[in-house]
Amino acid sequence: MSKRLLIQRAGILLILLVTCSPVICQSTKNNPSQNKPSSQKAPQKASDELKIDPAIFELKELLYFDTKLDVWVNKIPETFRLRTESLRENPELKELDSFNENYGQIAEAVLLIQKGNPKQAEKALESNTDEKLKQELDYWMALAYAKQQAGDLVGARNSIRQIFTLPVKETAIHLLAWSMLRQLGEKPDERIANEVLGVIVEVGMGNTVVVVAGFADGMPRLWVLAGGGGPIGSVESFPNEITMAAKKMVNAAQPLVNTFPLEKDRQLPKQGRIRFALLTAGGTHVREESIDQLDNRKSPALYALNLAAQELFTSLMKYNLEQSKKP
Image (tube, rainbow, N blue to C red; front, side, top):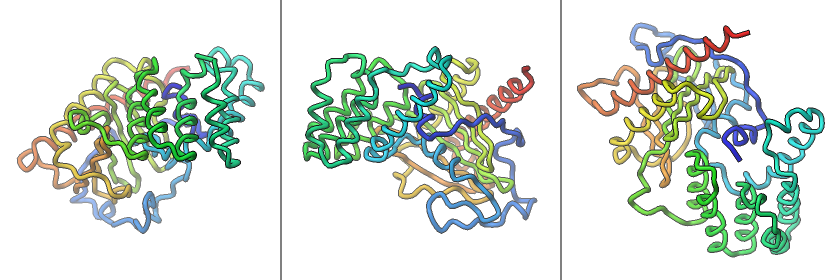
């Protein structure tokens, strides 16, 4: 399953182009209207002044690649149904969608788990001889969940580890696999636990929240959480300038990872503040600062990370504008 299909899990296709200022972190000192605190009573709750489609939050969460195992697996039957219907209505999509014809067997196994028969689901999956099916991310997710529900945590962890052997080597999938392993009680070795694999920078400005993300394989993302979405695509669909900027942001974050605490909640930043989230195999490390306090003299490394985020943001904005002019 590719990152494109990971995005499809949210059931959202965003084709809106971002239209906002090319300056990601302008100062709010001289703009009192941007210094008004937002209401943050619960995780992911935005300011009452900021009307955000809840679906945007679901899509944004995919940037963290730490969905709960049960949540992921329990969506498989519905994902199968929607993809099947989509292909039935639009046969030409078969050329673009690497949908396995036997994927329904995974969905059937999940239904068995939901009915309280994890052992039966486990047996059905393990007895399957279709090697192509075993190249599906969801196959190993479903098998891990079946084993977990049957009380076999060791077997569940072993199933998730198989994800690392799949031909797809995307950073996003590795982050997701490590998240599942942590949920199952396994921690990564120290040598890889704090390697930064992705960076998400969220900026509260102008009654919106701008989200720019970059991953170690060069995948970029850009969202404006007032209702607009950035470019969706694989690494190969972006210009080299953008993928290099995404990697540069990840590299800039590495010196900071040991100074950022592990995430305890996932609030959106208030207006005039910026939130840095560093994604690793060991978890998400987070730090939030006032935009006005970002100073090269106080924290050169954090300042450099912010500059790298600005560079990626500017490149994505330029790319979006160029794409919007095409017929």
